Image (cartoon, rainbow, N blue to C red):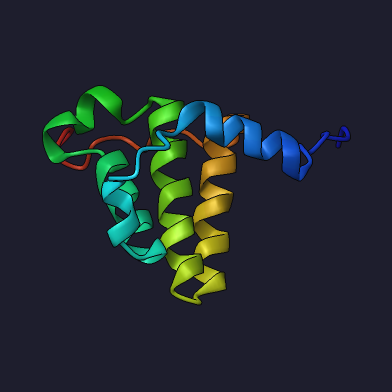
Length: 106
């Protein structure tokens, strides 16, 4: 596995400060970390109406699984978090693919 350079804290601060609003009226400030993670997971979840279009979209599937992993991690369920992270990794490294639709082929 190749070495991956992780950003240091000052680099991380720059990344986040460039991408996030520094407004004093931050609506996220009122939410807990777990609520924010759940909102992200809900936003990234593939809706039933979009399933056929996105079922093989590796970015969408990995994002959905990674967000759910964060939710489980914050709920102190590391085994579930790890399973979701492994699924996200599988989508990204192409070791898994979308199963056939259960409603087709009947």
